[in-house]
Length: 390
Ligand code: BEZ
Image (cartoon, rainbow, N blue to C red; front, side):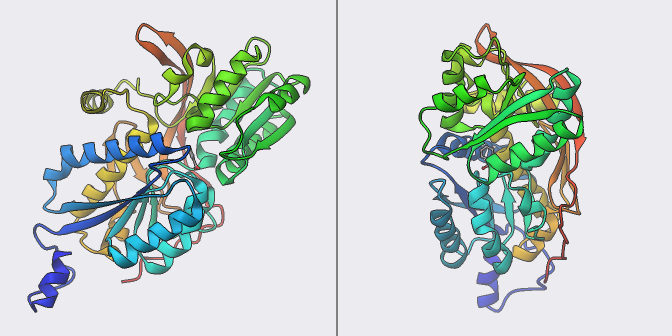
């Protein structure tokens, strides 16, 4: 940081006063290998696009250090320690897996290093384990799935079989769905959690789902696991009799073309679809496609909004760990998803949820929005938000 250099030279002024041209060191902690590698790349592309588009609005400059979590909590914890202790970053952004977020939570909280979560939905990080240093610009696992439980019951679905990978995100996503589906009067007729990053053959689980008497199947899978699952579900011939529903990560624009026609007719819910018809989304989608050749996914938007949040925080005068943590919780701006704000009770983003069907379009698989459900705010889930200590 420039302030540290100025301090060493005895030239630092008041710590509260922003220094023109502050250099903010950012640790980008993402999976660049493993089952979520493509998600990490999309988040980074969105992050870099926002810095290129909006970076000139702030006097700050951003020096980025990248580290690969490999989607392994112990590896990620080691990389986070390195970013904090060796690289001395001012802020960390990223984290895709809920397991990784659970592993680094105490470190960033104890070290008082602001963390902008750009994917991982771990409910506890903005619930019972919330921290003034953790601000989430993506979603929480409950937030994206609760609305689907109510909506599916309203469509006349009464019996559901659920499947998800066996780790924090899988369990919390299914919990969110089950809570509202059963509260509406629906019944869960079977539930399995598949070994995370190890399941290649979903056949035995699909056979159980078929025999369960369910009206529909609801799942969470993402990345490489989503591609395998959707293809196997289709080749098992289940789709016609047992419609497939899930979290929108199942049919993300990032890999829906790898799923191909197997994804047609799958209905999912999520906080972003690339077809949102607003000027802000159109301009983002055009710029993102021009830069990467890809349709933007939820992952790209989350990276983009994470960088926007950082830029907004520096525009508000934040320059060091404490002031960044404080300013990040107060950001509000219009992004591709619409007007975004952070719930001060939990530090989780508040946003509407879209229900969409994946359909075959002229240029590959695309999304038809079936419903826009009202902005979803998480319950505090035991969060007792403390102030940032200066
Ligand atoms: C998670 O682990 O929180 C997660 C991973 C991929 C997509 C969505 C959520």
